[in-house]
Image 1 (tube, rainbow, N blue to C red):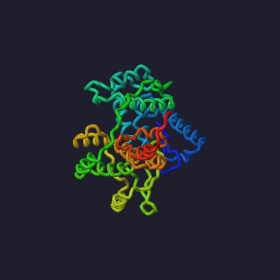
Image 2: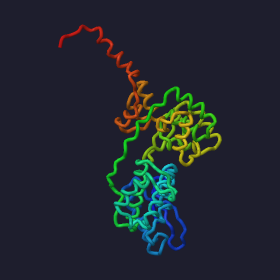
Image 3: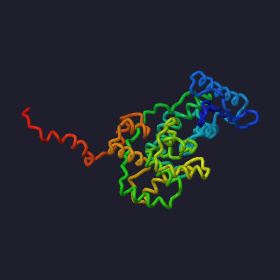
Image 4: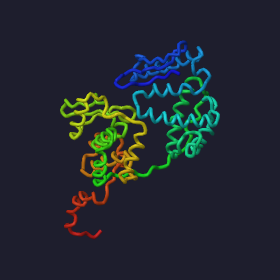
Length: 351
C-alpha cells in the first residue's frame, strides 16, 4: 500500500507504492515540499490516490489483510535504521498476537483486544516465538499499532483506530545513574577488544551526551575543515542539531573519513541489549547506555557551565528535562557554601 515519507537532506516528500498491474514496488519523489502545509496536503492526497488505485485494480492488500505493513514501515522509516529495527520488532510481536487471536484484518481489531495485548506481551505463549517484555515495551508496541491503524483507516481498511488513546499509563522507570570515574576506567579497559559499534558509540556519547541512535553519525555531517570543527546529529523528530565537535573526536572522525566510511559504525540489531550485556559483563548491571547522557549533563552542571550553553550542546529544549538528568550530590555544593561564606562573619541579628 502507498505511503509518503521524508528522506535525509531532501525538502520533498517521497512516495512508495506498488504498481497494481505489474506488482512492482515504486519509490520516487513527489516534488512536493515537506515544509509547505498545502504541498504536504497534496502529498497525502497522492498517497491516498495510489492506495485507491491498488485497491481498485486488485492490489496485494485488496483483501484488507496486514500484508501492506512491512512495505509501509520500510518506506516510512528508510532513513531511520534504528527506529525501523525497533518498529519491526514491535510488528513481529503484534503479528504473532493477531495470529493467535484470529485478527486477520485491521477491520477486525477491537479496543478490548488492544487492551488485552499488554498482559499477553508480558507473558506470551511459548509457541508464539515472542519473548517476554516489560509493561513499557508493550506500550511502545501499541504506539506502533496506533500508527499502523491510522494508516489502515486512511487506506480504507478500517473504520476507526481502536488503538488510539487507550489510557494505559507507563510505569515510571528507575532513575538512570551517573557513571563514576572508577566505572569509566573499567569500561574503557574492557572496550579495547570490543567491536567498533561499542567503542565508537561510547566515545561519541561520553563527549557529546547524545542518544544511542544519534551516535551512528553520518560522516558527511562531520566538518573537520571548519573553524571550529562541527558535527550534526539527527535528534528526536529527525531534526538536525549542530554543535562544535569535541576535540578528542577529531582524530577518530578523521581516520574514518580517510578510510572512506559513511557512518561512524555499522548499526547492529538490538544494540541496546548488547550494551546492557556489556555493562553486566563489566559488573555494572545498574547501567544502561542512556547513563552516558546523564553523566554528561551532570558533569556540565558540576563544572558550572551556563545552563543555556549546556542545553544547546546536549540538545535539550526544556530546562525541566535538562535538570531531570542532573545527578548532583551534597559534595557538589562547595560553590554554594563558598558563595554564602561571607555571611558567617556578619554580626548576628535578632529577628
